[in-house]
Length: 327
Length: 274
Ligand SMILES: Nc1ncnc2c1ncn2[C@@H]1O[C@H](COP(=O)(O)OP(=O)(O)OP(=O)(O)O)[C@@H](O)[C@H]1O
Ligand SMILES: Nc1ncnc2c1ncn2[C@@H]1O[C@H](COP(=O)(O)OP(=O)(O)O)[C@@H](O)[C@H]1O
Ligand code: SF4
Ligand SMILES: [Mg+2]
Ligand SMILES: [Mg+2]
Image (cartoon, rainbow over all chains, first blue to last red):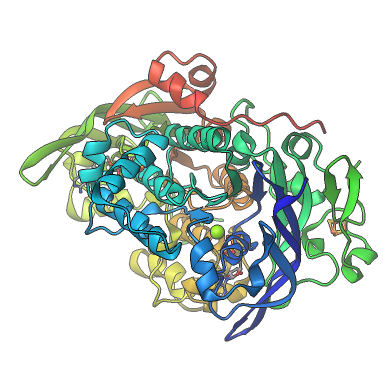
């Protein structure tokens, strides 16, 4: 099975006024066609930077210091801007936490969808779609994201729609280029639980129907569990554990994963006490030596402060980077 | 923990033990010539020392209830009784005095702090306005507040943008408890935060409640959090109370279809095997 996306030993720095942030510190990930991979981790751990780097829209001054990304056999780090235009938003597309930021408040939804189609045709050097073809494609896309009354929605301005509807529109736009890979960065974080459940259902349905490959980023483990077959747990720019969702959630082997799960209140539980992870994520200008989690880790020993733990396989499709992984 | 400037109120709570009781609370907003009933005949009561949760989807009126209770906006109808006194009948100095015993923490810590002022001045403000604490004694109180919310003293000299979301929310909570209120209204205090930070804040809020003998009105659309922290819960939809009861009974035996749907939409996690 060849991977659709593979990220190998990827290091990324962001120079800032105060010093250089070592934001991504050797990321290894791979995704098979049709798979949904969840990425969880606290805010600031580099999820968004990673997602945007896949799309070649990382922070402006960011520098890849080593490693590489390969998508569909193409070396992403070596593409020029013209090549990117045929991929970004077309073959790899992305949806975000706040759809409003990515919609133009002054144009109707129909117009914006139609503009996306025009832009894609241009990017792929295809003949422009006729007005009629565009309309047909728009209603097809709205249908794919399960919008029941496409005429009304097409005629609406973004502010006239609910948060859940706007997210559906953004997904429709993301689907316009028939992407192979969809990156969803906290797509449900800003939504109500009921709407969140609907959007997760929709994403699951799209994976199923269109064979879409998805990277689902969230700090909400529940949302990840609802759609991802595999999960990567990120801490301070490092993937610390990766494996099948069910394994990770029931048998976390990395102390950070265990901490993250222990911090979740359980809807079915009662007043059991929450185990907060002590401390906060480190400053990435001077990240902790050795294992970046060591200042907060209950299992840390001397070696943890000196040596970065290597990613080790501990079961079928389960890897962990820890000197003292849990049993 | 009580500062000399703050004396506990001798006001009796109402006979039934409630510190806050609200009846027939209604708020009609008028926008574009149209009336909109954001809160419609809401009644609730919170016992001293309890945590009452309000859940409901976005737009159901939760925050409007919070703002009405705090008298930040005027109710169209209804009565709000706090520690035996009718808040709706009070105004001016008297209202200000009563309101000092109730404080609110908002969802978005990023916009709750003035970006131009240091953390020190954010924390000093309630003392400067409401008490005559000054100088070294004031510094001591500010340090104590930072201590309560487990932040280093050096944070005094920072500006809000130099803090993380969780740290900002801790500052907002520190400021809200500065004058040792008896009722804390928490409007989605953890919604903008990470799960791990959320766990810290919630654990901290539970501890703080016992330490300072506080009562909470806790608004959230995160049902797991509500189940975790609240003794009683109210379910709101379109401005109305659909269901209320002990947290246990509402979650275990929801009476209303909407409540059931709300509870069912929370993604379930497989159980930890450890
Ligand atoms: N000043 C106002 N003028 C007009 N309508 C308002 C005003 N404030 C609130 N509303 C409306 O009242 C309703 C309830 O709003 P409220 O903020 O109380 O909801 P909520 O339950 O807190 O929602 P959320 O979960 O999104 O915070 C909404 O439809 C809102 O648009
Ligand atoms: N444009 C930027 N300039 C400087 N630092 C940035 C920029 N974007 C992100 N960062 C920093 O990179 C780190 C990771 O951020 P991010 O990927 O947004 O985290 P997450 O999505 O996991 O919450 C943070 O320390 C953040 O402050
Ligand atoms: S390597 Fe050491 S510090 Fe890092 S997670 Fe494992 S035990 Fe903890
Ligand atoms: Mg992010
Ligand atoms: Mg609100």
